[in-house]
Length: 208
Length: 208
Length: 208
Image 1: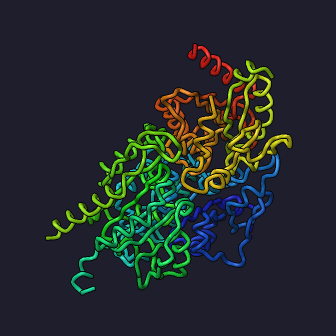
Image 2 (image 1 turned 90 degrees about the horizontal axis):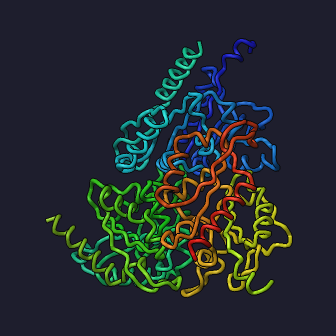
Image 3 (image 1 turned 45 degrees about the vertical axis):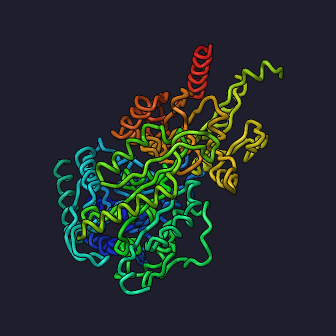
């Protein structure tokens, strides 16, 4: 990889929450890699129930010398901090990233982000995301149809997009894991990749 | 039990949260049973501190062949799901139920329901409760007097009843476990049974 | 200590949450002691990552005969309650206290207090704090600059001060643990002591 190529590789944090759609994480990461995007995955504890990371990945990536793809878990935040002056993981990761994508975003983490709860690594990065720097934060919600149609869902998504400036990749209609057909499924991998690349292109234009 | 009687037995989910009033669970279940209502109990982790389920109950009921009374815990949700296509416990239970009663509803779960947090089995069923199907969701709050008189309590109860259509069984005044006399105690078992039967009668009328 | 002096010693609960500023707990307690203020410390689980209590302290203080300084943890609430009629720890501590100071108050507990979540000992005392008795509740927020500048922070602090009557000791600007210079640091120990003494003086005047 030439220095020039390296300079153009973008850094993406991929937050994964507790929806069945979490199984698409490897497909997402491979796609991003082929588009010159380096990915660090941040799963919640619930998300880990759904995913098997590929063996080739670095687990618990080093925060002093980041190699991608890798992932960091909640425990890494506390094990990496021993004393005053030690690096704070959610700040290191936030500063490393050009863009933050949360896909799938489940109903529980959606509520946490709306009210500002930050009790794990993923939501600490969200709460510390620097809105003034205009780095994009993209969300791809996923939940069952009744959850999606609950009036809270639209309220929460409106706050995240209108008040905080996050970009929403809308849910789609399909036969969900729970067997019901309806709205609430995560957008396709293709749509998510496309929206992310479009957002990065926009960033590049803004930087000119 | 004749087929006719079986057809008229109603299915009730009984959510139990972390208030001392949780000790009334067995009395509630016996009463419901005598009124032709089958009950599945959904305790939060905190609620389990207060209750001793009767030996005759099925623990960790089977989701393929439900026998009541039984109870399901948070861990059951994750142990019952192994791979794509497996049943999702909070959806199975929601679909099984005709009515959902949460008694006692403590201040913490009240807040979770108001903001849409769903981090355990009980609150996942709440978040996925199908408001369009008009299945009743009844709440019987219970907390100490100062908690009850905090301005948040009325705000939360108003959102649950006015915005989401839940039915509130109001707190009563009595000498609470903490030794103080005041408002905040859960309504009596008699009142809760009476309100539940009244709600079921209303459902039956609507079905005619 | 004469009986008269004893009567004038004030009782302070010191809530500690998961910010690096938690390391100042011993300095705060020593200062309060020298100003005739007895302190019980209530750390969250996250706060315990940052603090080393002095050996001379009582750990897991007895709730029947309180000796200060001491601290109580989340587990103490559940281990002290065995059966109907047993004392409820968060009520005992609330009634013992003349004043409640939370320093540092991190972004996560700030959100919990705003929405009324009460899932640990500290937030149960907050939720049960008797606003009608006008006992002061003082908060000293601490978080990194981007977290502080997130629009939710000011919204939350306004609700706590305007709606609930809590007293805010504003964040200050300095070079934070994460290496950035900016607003968000906890006020100095001197400022916190000064504000607490001023509030106690005001209480004494009101009692005349």
